[in-house]
Length: 351
Image (cartoon, rainbow, N blue to C red):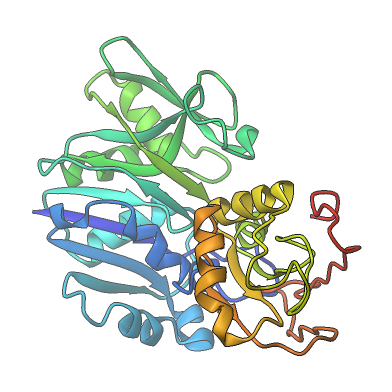
């Protein structure tokens, strides 16, 4: 039997004045916990256990919300602990015991997305990312690093110190429950000061020379471990209301020799900027005073130039456009931004 454990029993101190970070809404509408599980092939697991704590259950209805989010997933189980734990490794240990987990299992962080395929027969392994191939990773000094030999065997895993080009992605698997329990208890008996990470447990197991862990390489990774990284994701997924005439196309009106019926003269630099925003996850909504009869012509121009808008709002008033939005710690100020360009000018200096 294979089991996936997603520990969510921490206080989320890095996200002050908010609900638990795993309950935050990703810009695409899914909760962080949904996104965290989505990247891996969960079909290899017989059980998926999400471990939460009673304080979060009482204040934020954590258990109820999870039951609503995963109502169609029969593999999901909720492990409710009485109080916060001191570390993810303690959360895992208590979950293994309370939920009577047997066989092989994996542990997945709740605050990142990892695109990786795990084998049906889980072995001792760590999911990692090669920084030589993937240069988009932020907060590199805050990551844990893996030393891998030429046989793809992990020699050690070290927290917060750059010792290789391979970072740990917070996804670990063990071919037997007892391996983790043994390592955690022995490490706990050594009275090590500070938080005991899962990486510390694995590093200890490796030091005994009794166990072998291998590296599994992920194809995609998005990290939300700190508020800075989470806000950066929100920034990438902003919704942009983009005017047509004078922004994407050289300005013209309904009448004249150049008009809405025949003008296809784009502003290439602005088209390219919008394309880049779209590729990062930005949601593009086209706004225009052009009436509905010009929709098909406009759609053709946009698609030809690589812009696939979420929506096109036709027939708007030829006047100022005002966006009204609320702000809060989860959608920080300013939650609405206005950019007013001189007609037919470039937008890159303003974004």
